Image 1 (cartoon, rainbow, N blue to C red):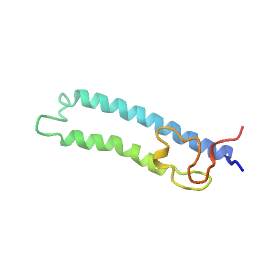
Image 2 (cartoon, rainbow, N blue to C red):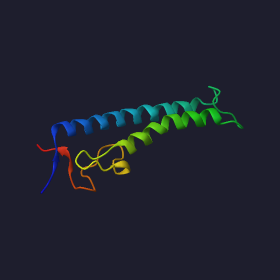
Image 3 (cartoon, rainbow, N blue to C red):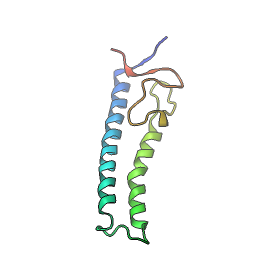
Image 4 (cartoon, rainbow, N blue to C red):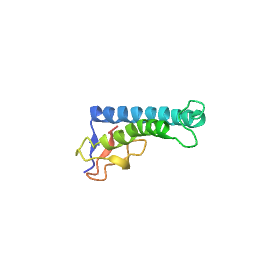
Length: 102
């Protein structure tokens, strides 16, 4: 028997996708700007990269947290890294299709 999500479960996953995608775009853009202008901003020098390292961790940390937080609405198993930037098609644990039927 093939299982699909309810409309509410699907909406919750699509909301996660939007947040994940938007944060990734923000962090990627910020990282590029910070890396390009890091020496002008005083964040890095030939000997000291501490300020830049802290900023990098602060930008990348939420991406890791969002990936690890995502769970399958049907079985509550962590989807984790099988999600990448978007929700996968199907849960590897229970086989539920991760979209609403229709």
